Image 1 (tube, helix red, strand yellow):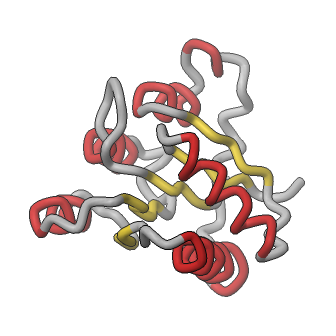
Image 2 (cartoon, rainbow, N blue to C red; image 1 turned 180 degrees about the vertical axis):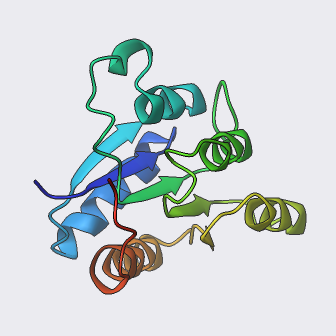
Length: 145
């Protein structure tokens, strides 16, 4: 089973670009897409629609947007870091916000990386490809279980 990437993204266009960029980079990992912060936490902690999910299988990487409906990205990150089951998950904030406050808060809450989404498709595609290659191929992941 290929490790999972959890993509937390509410914008359909950015979701499509990220999926296309990962595919073009030949990253064969399964990508689970959730579209708001509440759904992200439900997936990670096996609640509601994900109550029957195998909680022993965690994503290898979480790509987290900040501006999300229901529960914002920073609150999702706070919840991930507060739980012993998920506190070591690599979380890359992938957002359109370049505000200093968001960057400081993201790193302060334990983000592993903070990437501002380029507006240009080619640059966005390249950024996602590089993230995928680094976090899924080069980076030595934390042993789970």
